[in-house]
Image (cartoon, rainbow, N blue to C red; front, side):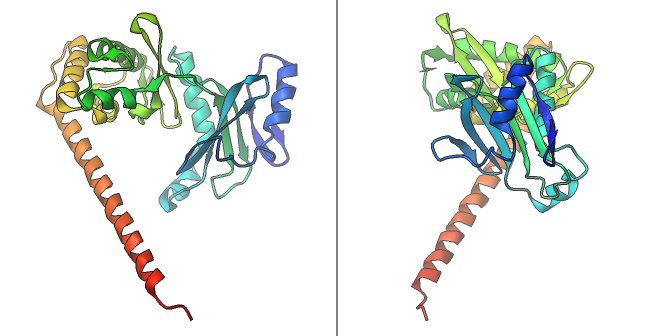
Length: 283
């Protein structure tokens, strides 16, 4: 795609489908999300639209909206966020790791704001995320939507082992980015979203990178669940979950706690300042 100062790619099965997608997804007409369609609006705006190829299905659009100064500076030397998401999803699929199927990406040529780019993928239907599943176990629940720890841990462990064994270093493996579909007999299938940070090796992912990913997945778990899951994962590598493997989990959990407290403090300051401003007499 190269038109009206935009460039990108469209993935379609034939020329008819290309024309359909081009007409429906032209970046000049994508617009902004409605409140009902919006999935997220923080650093990135993420929303859904009807799939022009099949109105019964949906597509997901992702656009960066907030860029910190240093990221904006460094980002000028990197591909756009949309292109990185496209590349990450495409490479995952090449390696047999399920993810939301890419449909298109667009970027404004010469854009210095780094926000005029869109990534479009298919909407993944899921029953829940790994975050919700593991958070339930952390709260002491014996099962989540009928899935027990005994059923969940081995299946999630095998999935993440397969991903890492195929040279994937996801780098943003929070529980919310692992979507889960439950079928009969509580068989779980997994799909990754938010693929823009993924890195790839031509060999199995090194242990230090695996641990980096797993600290993020296990952050919502209680310590007993984390130890159980990681003992299982490390055991399948023929290794033990010892002190040096546990240390990154403690450090990451501490980092998360500090960030949360800082956010709470900043919110309290903001509300106090607003309260002071509201009490000041107007002139």
